Length: 246
Ligand SMILES: C[S@@+](CC[C@H](N)C(=O)[O-])C[C@H]1O[C@@H](n2cnc3c(N)ncnc32)[C@H](O)[C@@H]1O
Image 1: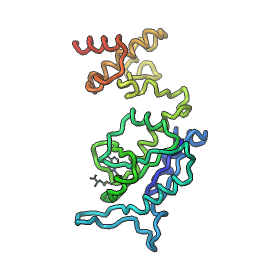
Image 2: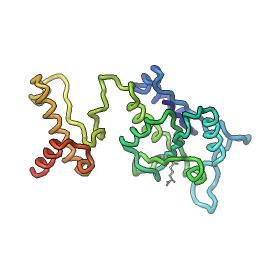
Image 3: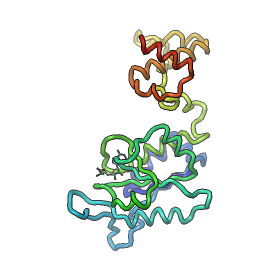
Image 4: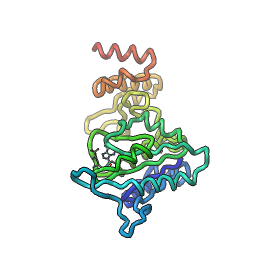
């Protein structure tokens, strides 16, 4: 998969791309992440990328021309199999990002992510260039860079082969619709706090049952609204109903 990120602040990305799972995915050529400086697509002497909003108001807006040019340049080099590809604007006005959307995005061979800044972006970018608008939460960031990093990280770890067996995504919170069960590692007792005995028993069936119960209980306690939409087996659904009754 290739992820093309358009930004005014390319210097924000090397840390993300040179650490941990993303670094390994790039080294193993499972993923390629290209950072494009929007300023490189300007034609004026001062490389101006922003201007004041028509009608007045505070702040500056990103101009449409360099963003259209950057996207069109990236698209011009693509093979027919790679088109159409999602052109995603990171914006607090977009659909709320989720594990489901991350999984949906792994179906594409290439994604384009556009990071806004300042007061926002000329609306013609949303109207005529982008195919999707994503928000990472109901709050306002200074720029789309952190949002693009969140989307990139969440998508890349779902690309087949990226996570080794040591970190499977199957039980992760939000994958099945449930929060993940609690986990423990050595030592078995720390400051008088013991690891639940069943986890030390070596009985795989019992461990699986305990984890299933814990995942349901935890979801009920912390995010009960998730249970309604969760993809539960009939047994899990019965268990959820019993636990709900108390
Ligand atoms: C200061 S914000 C602009 C907010 C805009 N004036 C509004 O009210 O919708 C600047 C940029 O940060 C990014 N951004 C801010 N909050 C975001 C969020 N919750 N999710 C995704 N991107 C966000 C967007 O790219 C946005 O263009």
